[in-house]
Image (tube, rainbow, N blue to C red):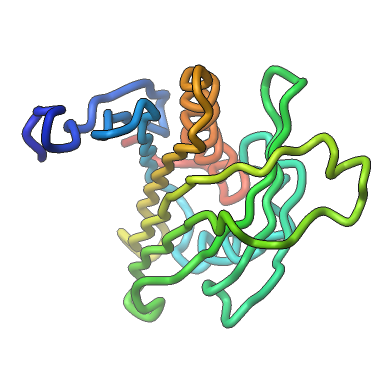
Length: 200
């Protein structure tokens, strides 16, 4: 895919972990210590069903990894949104939130879609509950994307890619572990929301 030369180009994807339904990859990016992660799965679910799950922002805590709160702040259409998203840590003492811009990059009628997600690092929104706000730090430098492709009338290929570089010195392992879990475990949650999966 890409030449493995860290000096001038991003490294190729390497397989990180997998189960019967989800495969997760990672790669090193140039000019950052924070890794990029991608997970793939094939769902036994219609394209329309997967789309409906992704559109339902307020239900993200039901399946996204350690998501504690999600809501729309602005919406131009079903996939052009500004989203407030709060994330807990598997360690139990770390919480963050992020303002995300989501944009659809291809036509839903083709049963193939790319949704890009990028943090809005200068967004003014703050959680209205002061006690909640005090326990969350604002994550910056996040980017990602969803890729959906209808394989048949009853199956959909899904890929989820994430990367965050919040500039937190000496916190690379914490952030990389979080991004890997968001990527891999969120697709496992999506499996539960849409029904049983097909083997890759």
